[in-house]
Length: 117
Length: 119
View 1 (tube, each protein chain N blue to C red):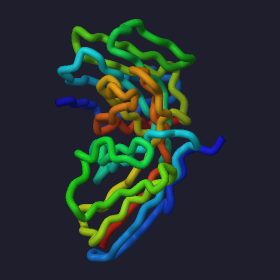
View 2: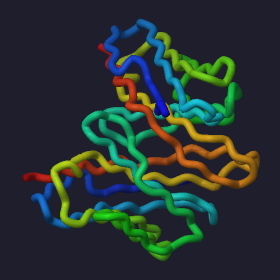
View 3: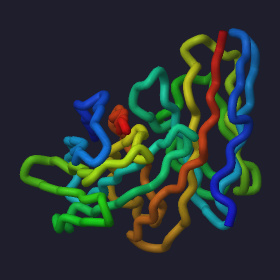
C-alpha cells in the first residue's frame, strides 16, 4: 500500500514567486493535515481537512497560504507570494476517519523542503 | 494551550550505549495522546508509539522502551544498546482527544532531539 506522497521533494524559488505543494494521502484516509518545520524548530500544525472540508485552519500563518482539497482526495498548498520566512520543510499527514471517539494515528509523508531566496 | 518540551537538542552516544530522550508536556485536557516519531535522514516521519492519558503502563518494544509518568507530565523514550541506524531526529508529540465527530485533532510537536550514534 502506498504511503503519503508529497511533491516536489525540494523547491527553490525566489522571493515573490508562487509555489504549489502537493500531497497525496493514503487511499481512503479522510483526514489530511499540513505541518511545517522552520529552521530546526518544532513542527507546527497548519491545517486539517476532513474529506474536502477544512476542520481547523488555525495554524495557517497568513493569507499568502491557500490550501485546497478538491474532491477529498489529494491536497495542494499554495504560497503566493513567497517570503524568505516561508522557508522550511512542509509535511503532509493523513489518518483514517472513525466514528465515535476513536483515535487513529497519522502517517506522514517525506516532506517538501522549500527554500525561498 | 498544549506544549511539548524536548530540552535535549542534540545527543551523541557511542554504539551499544543506552540513551534516554526526554519529553515533558503541558495540557489542560484530561484525555490526550502522546506520540514519538522518528525522522531518519531520508526525511519522512516514522510513527513509533502512541499512548493515551489513561494508560500509564510502560511499554517495551525490542530495544525501545517508553516511560509515561502523569505525575511529572513526562513521556521519556529509552533506546537500549543503541546502533548507528538509530541516528535520527526524534520528535515527541501531544494531541487532545478526538473531535466529537471522530476525526483526529492535530499534533503538537516538540522541537526534536538529534541523536547521533557513533560506531
